[in-house]
Image: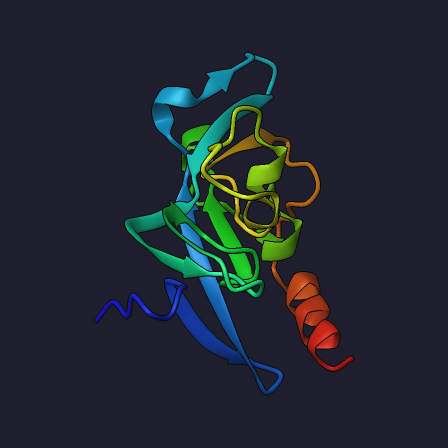
Length: 148
C-alpha cells in the first residue's frame, strides 16, 4: 500500500535510523546527448497528488511540491543517459528549493518557497554535486546529523 501521509517510496533501517527514499526517473523527452559522453536532462520531483502542506510558521498551501526534509534520500535512475539501471543519490536538504526557481509561484510566501523543493530538477552526466554514485556516505551523513 502507498501511504500518502508518509513520503518515500522505500523505507528501511540503517544504523538504527529509519531512512526514507524517494525514487525518480529522468524525463526522456528532456534528455540532451552531447555525443561526447556528456548528457543533461531533468526529472520531476514532486508528489503525485496536490495536498495541503503545513509549515513551521503555521502557514499552509495546497501543492504537489515536496517539502525540504519530507524524505531523507533521493535516488534518480540514469537509464535515459547510460542505458543501464544506474542510480545517483542526494540528501534531501541539498536539492534545489522553489526559492531558487525563476518565476516560482507568486502564491507562495518566501518562507514556503525556502521550504519546498523545486518540482523540475536538472541532472547532468557525468554527475556533479550534490549527487553521488553510491548512497553509503550520504546515509552516514544523515545518521550523523540526527545524532547531533
